[in-house]
Length: 412
Image (cartoon, rainbow, N blue to C red; front, side, top):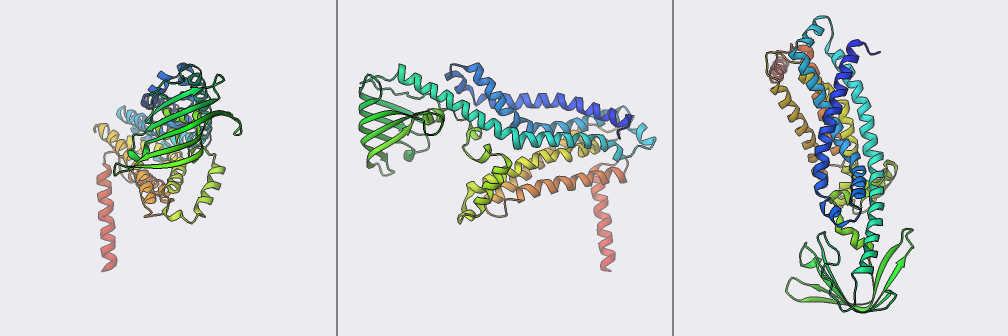
């Protein structure tokens, strides 16, 4: 049962967490918004697209900002109590460090559940909805292009604006119903090197409205043509084809990809689907050399690790915040920054070790969690054994000397 003291700390940390959460989420959203500039400029319904983007990125942002907000709020509240000597008064009346950590830990459990739901349920749902919305918008763009810009004997050099690939189209003759074409030239100039560029020429073509996928698409079918690809030696590789199909909606959609958020991978899977797919990937013969599969593993583990950090961060924040009021609070804040850096550095280290096939992908799950748990036990022990005037590094040095002396006595 939460006492008056617990409710006081709970309410103070909760209110400050909400303020920090709003600030951090806004800053991260503005950085993400920069990648959407071209998309908002080119689309005609920019406000609606912006609203959909907000709904799309919020789960991913909350997953990251909730643990950080809780960590900083816990430390700041206790730092202020130490500065006003409230913590000394409470500790003198018999309040232990466990009592200081009880309410923040309870708040951390609530936030861990929210962050996990955001990462494992809300984020996949948002990715699926964003993909559907972008598909519908791309389809509208293709329809407007076919209606207003496609003309026979006219070279359209900026067929799809934005994106990394530059696409040009020339059609010698177009039927009145715009379903058949004669003399087609299609050039694609990619930014990833010569192998990413290609030219397609065809005697005829046909525009098909495909509905087999459930969400209709415009398919540009080229017939009796050639595919020209440049080689590194300056020559060209020419391949003849009888039939070649291009999804115009998919091509238009790729011009507005927003980095990792539009990756067509397993990130839009719910946990049950994710686990089932990962099991299938492990059974494949190329599992030991498939970096893409390992990245999918480590991403799923990241979705678990970051929310679970909410269980440890508030306790660490409270222990760092309890300090001698004569000392500067900047040391506590510096410690918070170091902890955040180490935590995410360990996540990245685990991912790289897995991708390089040095260790199993599970290391990206166990390494950061076990490390942050060990750190929590360490700072709790520090606050239990020493007064607030004892710095953490001095505590570590004393424990090291004690352990060394014990080992020497045992060897003797």
